[in-house]
Length: 328
Image (cartoon, rainbow, N blue to C red; front, side, top):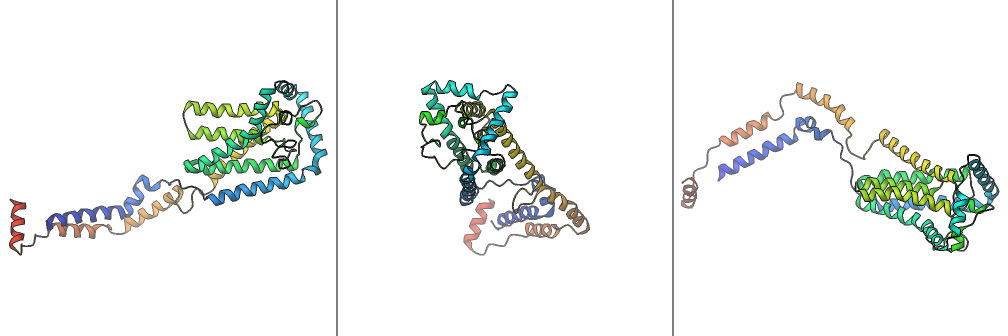
């Protein structure tokens, strides 16, 4: 029995010495891989980020009345630019939707509520279930909003419904949660923030998130359909110009490209060795091994000596019986 125990301990020492040796830590391909952190981001930091964005948006909203005239002028300029290109579908869609009361209510409810429910729902689900892709997508969404805020400040633009010849379908139908007129969100929305359309930018972000979340066809079909429905809703309700829609897609693409570039340039994980660092240390460790004696030689001698140790003689009759039963 003692011989078996000695052999077992010898095997353990040999395995541990191999695992702790510099050869195993550098020469193995697994040592050069960087583990992607899969822990959830701290929830209170995420809430602070949302609160910070809401604070900036509220500040812009409070200054909106001071920029009303310039916003109306910019809206007229945008509409004139579209008409010069013969690409101005907003008025026709707006009047068509206003003439269809039931559909107008559905589209208005979609416009006012899907924007927040879908985006925040996906963001929360990613935080809870997909920590591996949450952080870059979260960063892209934050950057989308920051780009939008900058444009809102530099180029305030009124929506089409504030111009002559358009109908405010959302206000006329009394959509649930409407930010127009006397709705529950009235007074809390910046109505001079048509350029770029954050409805579209957020919808594009949702499409990318859904595409990365699942390879299933029906999920990716929804990912493609959602921005298309949102585009129809923002145009037909008289809340955005076609140029605003294109600017929204461009904002989402710029934000996601910026996040991807930042991940390529900056260190990827906190406290983890990167591939570059591992490959930089590899030649130094190889040179040290070439100059130093084999580090596991002493361990191998100890293992060999333990395996050659003879069994102790049985000291009692009971031990003799056990030894005979094992050997016989």
